[in-house]
Length: 457
Image 1 (cartoon, rainbow, N blue to C red):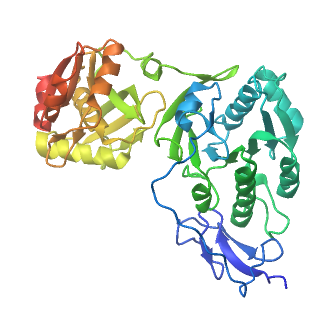
Image 2: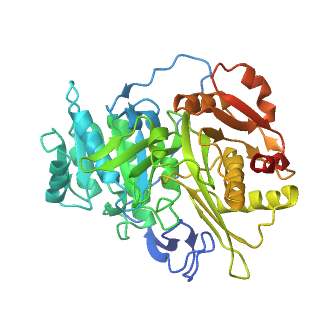
Image 3: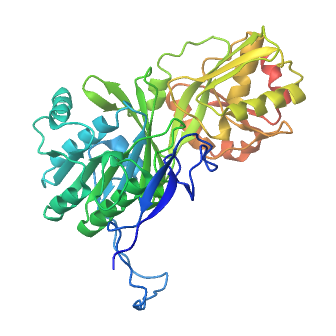
């Protein structure tokens, strides 16, 4: 007997369910995102609760296991983010703002793999664009002669029937929000459709042992639209970041079952598509001007890669009752904490100043090691005295004013010396690590924020 369908009210932003309609979602706080959906019905497999399940076998943690077989994409930045290449049978979710370059990157990926000597079968299935539109992009990128199988389809049942009879190695679904399954009584892009379509496609990828890429739309907060369970279903979640005003694009891994997380790949958007950036530090600092107050260079770590970026600060008297705080590329709450420490521990008067902070190049920084760089840039702008142009800074600031140690200091110093920097300001607790380095760089240790002001006297 077929299972009867039931009605639920589901938030299209976070996937929360309710028994009745309401204007605001209590889970994510969004308004007018709750839609009525039918659950169950013919589209879901019926479960015979009277039948008994089979016994499962347990094994020990020790034992032999097969090594992961990876396929190199010939795109080094993408291979770095994926952990060394594509894993057969893996499912990868790629999210990013509209027009950021997701479809361009995946089209370049399929063309690169399809041109490998063993002639792997690559399928690009677009649900948003017509075939002619994809062909125009391929021609602009110079990929029109690549042996890629292209189709425009949205019915998951037809896609599965086609892929089951193929010998696919890589399959691109662009995008998962446009796919639909007949048995699910809701519109494409709804929580139920996204969850059901993803489940069927991922199950087929595991069965046929091909790499599956799902393109996902993002909400205005920057998270992938649809149910949160979608990120748990896939093996890898990649976010494509960048500002349209900048030519840089950052591919960041926030989840990876086959590699490290927080790894980044840097690309530059050009006329011929996305071009890899082998030395992102040099590119981020290419337009930097020395001897300018409010500017300093931060030696950061993104995954396993050291990256040097310029932090810019501007402090000016406010004309309003409450000063303005504008931040681009960093956590605004972290800035408030650094300003409070500078006022309480250094005696600086910042409550009557507007403060603007910018991470040049469009990179978003999240590690606390940038605290010291931000503080130095703010003091430099406030005193109108520039820092030495050949100096890098890193360190975490505590609420009591102490400068805390950060991870991998030697890697940061090595990258700084490679780019011609001769001085470094870092936490004093790294004295032992300093002895183990052979880099020709002058290290200045700071243990408390009260000593920051001495650099500008």
